[in-house]
Image (cartoon, rainbow, N blue to C red; front, side):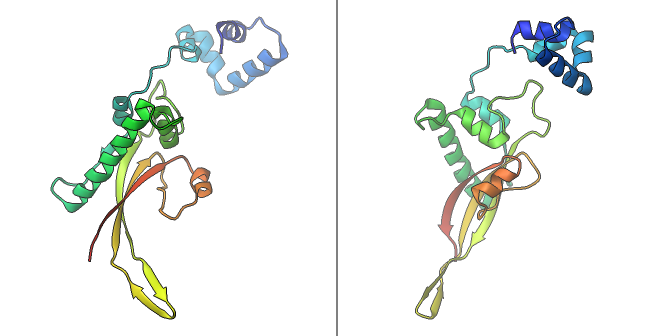
Length: 188
């Protein structure tokens, strides 16, 4: 929003139908009154130089919640987190084509930059183990293959986590969350 538009909205002088409609909407939610009483508030509505995202900024926003040190779970979580960090470094260096850190952050949180006032619910990485058992069948006989553990890392921004069998449409019906998976060694 340009400075001239902000001035038109909050001065109250402009009688343009579009500005009047916008002013009416801002009055309904109280933003117009705040802008009139506290002019410094308008700074939040002015476009400013956006801060370039770095791997450090993204990792500070998406803090991992690891299991206890020394557990098998922690070992698997470290492997998955290492892959996630590698992906962030590759995306940050521009080697993922059009995928950038802003895209990763937007997929994880719904916004491609950190909000001025921060996140209400701070996003975090949570690791979940899912056990998958594959079953093979051949002409009426079935053979159980070894159980395989799959570690999932979820970027949690809402109350629902992404499940391994969710479709993309199901995921996008809910608030945005993301996942990164790694197949772990087979266990007996």
